[in-house]
Amino acid sequence: MNQSVADHYTQKDMLARLRRALEESYPVSKPLSVDDLAAADHLHARGVAATQSLATGLKPHSGDAVLDVGCGVGGPARWLADKFNCHVTGIDITPEYHLVSQNLNFLLRLKDKVQTICADAVALPFGDASFDIAYSQYVIMNVEDWTTFFNETSRILRPGSRYMISAVTRGAGPPPQYPLPWAPDSTSSHLLPSEILKSELEKSGLMITHTRDCTDENLSAYRRAVKANVARDGSSSLNPQLFMGTILPEAQENSAVGYQNGALNAIEILCHKR
Ligand SMILES: C[S@@+](CC[C@H](N)C(=O)[O-])C[C@H]1O[C@@H](n2cnc3c(N)ncnc32)[C@H](O)[C@@H]1O
Image 1 (cartoon, rainbow, N blue to C red):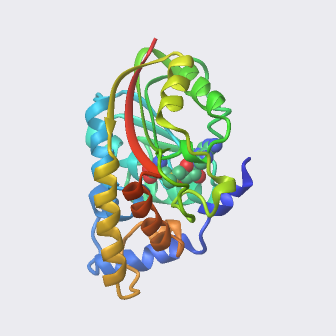
Image 2 (image 1 turned 120 degrees about the vertical axis):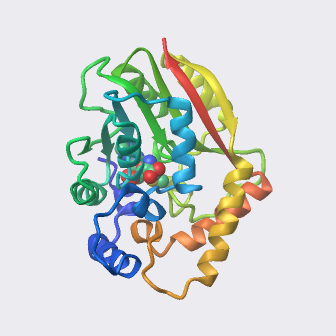
């Protein structure tokens, strides 16, 4: 297991803090929905809007077997399972995120549709051609061995099935400032230029059918997040900081600067398995 990745994402008392935030946001106890949690459990720029964009590309159908590679605390997996009635398996390398996912799958009454497993994306614990759809949202920046990551993803997909990746890529600008949301410093960050990302996908047997530059959208989202951080009064409101820790405000500011000065770009790529 890549311990430094898991250490970066592991936060203290995530479930207890989430419980307090839920009590604050929903003082009257009511059955929670994926939309209620969406402000906190989609761990990437643009939150649930980015997951919606992913769904537009992937077009999941009822009953599809979907794999979320690097599922975080499972927000996108639960949202897709709930909205499209598909069966989503999520894998993540961070054991504490896996524990949170399992609790939230149960709390949202989705444990029959969403299964989460603690595993490394470079050694997927599934047979060949076992999924109809796969995706990974903002994970590849943590992965040193891109070639194996894409070979593994390609291996578990059925021929003709769809894969979508959203990623931060290295732009032509100056080196980015750290921390960034996925890494405290440059030693644990593996930013790819988008041209290498595309060629790694193609080499693994994934044919690129559509790409979309999301740099400006992510920049706007991080500017909004920076403003919200300033306005927030330290309350335990529902937001991704519950799962990404006190480093997040500074990481969001650095992301905004990086998208602005060309250090960072963001891209969505849709592929079909050959
Ligand atoms: C920025 S978070 C995004 C989480 C989720 N995809 C989302 O969008 O809500 C990156 C996630 O990738 C996971 N991750 C990083 N490297 C991984 C690997 N080699 N295998 C599985 N998960 C990994 C981390 O534990 C973390 O949960």
